[in-house]
Amino acid sequence: MQNMKQKIYHISIFLLFWFCGAVYPQNHKADILQQDLSGLFDNSSMIGILGEDCSRIDIHFAEVRKIDDREYEIKGVSRTRLSLICPFEGNIFIDSISSCFQIMKSECTEVDGFIYGHYSFEEYGDKRYSGTFSGSFKQGYRMRGQQIEKGRNEIVELKLNLSEYRGKWKSAKGLTKVCSWADEIIPDTPANFCLFNDAGEWVVSPKYRKNGWDNLYNAYHNENLTTDEIQKARGVEEQKWWVNKSQSCKIN
Picture 1 (cartoon, helix red, strand yellow):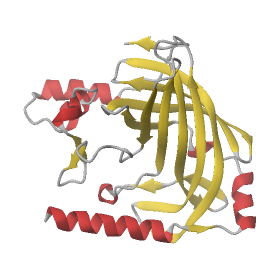
Picture 2 (picture 1 turned 135 degrees about the vertical axis):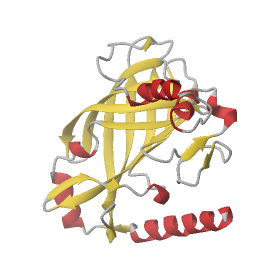
Picture 3 (picture 1 turned 135 degrees about the horizontal axis):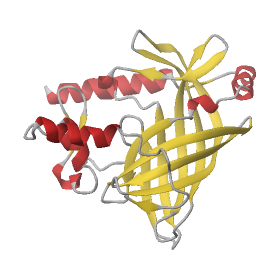
Picture 4 (picture 1 turned 60 degrees about the vertical axis):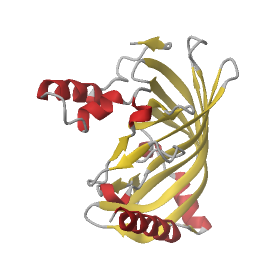
């Protein structure tokens, strides 16, 4: 049964990206680029990994400003292992736009295409903890008349990332680590990083939970906790941790 689910998943992903592979005609692409696409990135919260030990990292984009048709300024906050919080700022650069031929349209899913590009964000503050993020990204979108909005997907089983960032983090001292994050399925993780339960949700394997993932497991998947313990863990997951951010890196 599990093998069948995996086959269906791989076939679905293949078909999705086959249908989403067509690049828009140049004039339509220019029309999209001329719009202010800040709303596709603003107020985005994502989760990811940092380093080979897959330490948990949370990313929040707090402010977005259009510089020109292909460049946007981003201000945000990172949180590592639920404890180290660092503000950052930088830029994203749009490289290409593709469409999905309306194939991803339903009551639960709306995706007209993806925007692809690259990014560079620099954390500021204490150099013992800060560094630079860089890599490539993709962002799903949908058309609402002439307006472009964030794509929407409410079908967990699709395992579809509408926001995905794949790259590295380089410390002020020159240490480089893999660092990727997304809104759904974290890319670039080891094969044994997580398992998928019957509901299609990913659950971090015991090997990696000590690296900042224990609270997420306790909040939604640990059946051995009391109601109060579960609610406490969920409170941590659902809090707006990026509010009242410091002007430098700080440890909670």
